[in-house]
Image (cartoon, rainbow, N blue to C red):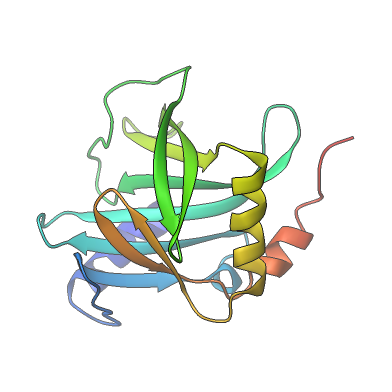
Length: 169
């Protein structure tokens, strides 16, 4: 999270700006730019001046299943949600025009007094679609989430996916 705080002023100043339909400014960080099997988009919405982060990472569930997990949080210490949830709610995100049901939890960062959303596909079919889309895409994926349209980087995803160790045995 500290690199995000360092880069937020750079982002806000307008360097590497990419406009979209409902999102004011975006700055992507590809999978290849990060050693921790993650990518992100910093963005400022048309209806807010606060910088937000939409991040994806390859990780493992508590049961050891390898999957892709998304996070949504503010670059500054502002809460996206109010308290930790143990039961997820279900929302829909759209990936390149395809609606995918997602499970969404509210978690607290371990190193900060800040809550964020964590999301992952709800069904095996949705998970397969998202993972395959990231593997085969040659240009950023259009993701519609929370009334925003984000263009998410794909460069380096396949390497990150293949290097994550697969399902735990």
